[in-house]
Image (cartoon, rainbow, N blue to C red; front, side, top):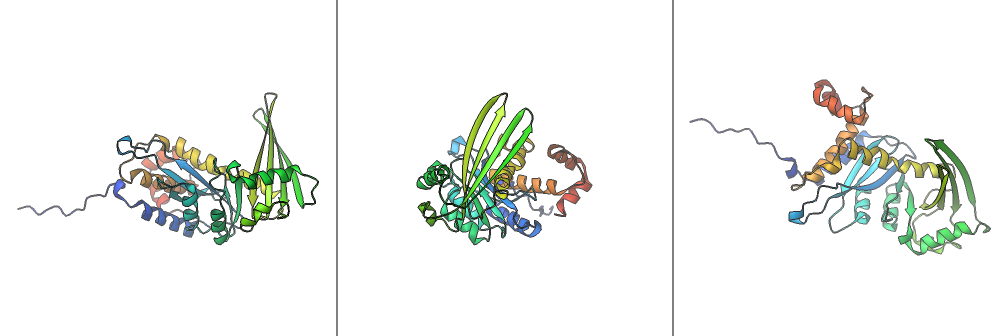
Amino acid sequence: MASPNTTPLPVPLSRLNPKALQNSFIAWMNEACQLTQGEVVAIDGKTVRRSFKKGDRKSAIHMVSAWACQNNMVLGQQKVNAKSNEITAIPALLALLDIKGCIVTIDAIDAMGCQTAIAETILKQGADYVLALKGNQGDLSDEVKMLFEKTKLPLKEQNIEEVDAGHGRIETRRCRQIKINTKYLPTSERWPKLNSIIEIEATCIIDNKTSTEKRYYISSLGLDAEKAPSVVRQHWAVENKLHWVLDVSFREDESRIRRNNGAEVMSTLRRLTLNLLKANTSSKASMKRKRKIVIMDDALRSELVCPVI
């Protein structure tokens, strides 16, 4: 009688524990990626559009990622629970990261990121914050706008102007930063270590058409009008270098993997792969081409598994 096959069957990706995988990924990045003093860490969420499942009434998953702007790497990610939102997911993610000395930026569309609990978590981790201020912050939003309009108040303020031109577009950005004075901004007292408020006014000229937009931020940083707009601009790397790459090179939004934990596990593995490919500088090929090269090159695959970050 033939002996039974004792070779263990491979475990499907959908059966893996996504939380354990994410924690391992974050622990690896905390050890492997050295963040520099003052590095911007951008926090932003992304929905995996086609991970929903109508039959089970399962919504598409939403992942919040932390992007190290100077290192160009994902530091970690956290899934937003179906009955929750980014307000709970962001502090949970930040608590796992080694971000001491960094500047954390959040610019959520609905301003979920602008919450006192999130600011407290950032400070507890030894970092500073620059948080977008939107309309749902009520009194604080109104007070900040009013304060910038009252230019004759005796406040410590710095200003800077920058001009960019190219591709038929001329953009002028004016940054004003005001040191907090609770006399004129009473709502600021409930925000931990709130030191300054920032106004970015962007005027864009395209085809002789001019548009102007003002955006407001609260920050634990002191007055430094040259640094403030740079920090705000760097935040958008999370969109251009992470979310855009996931959509275009990894085609994440087209993925129909949705059984059990499959969508969440694959989301983590895509970010892990992206980090490995960015860390490898032996090829100057695009991200999309690098992925194809790795499929056919055993030596490069071995090099990617043990990268020097």
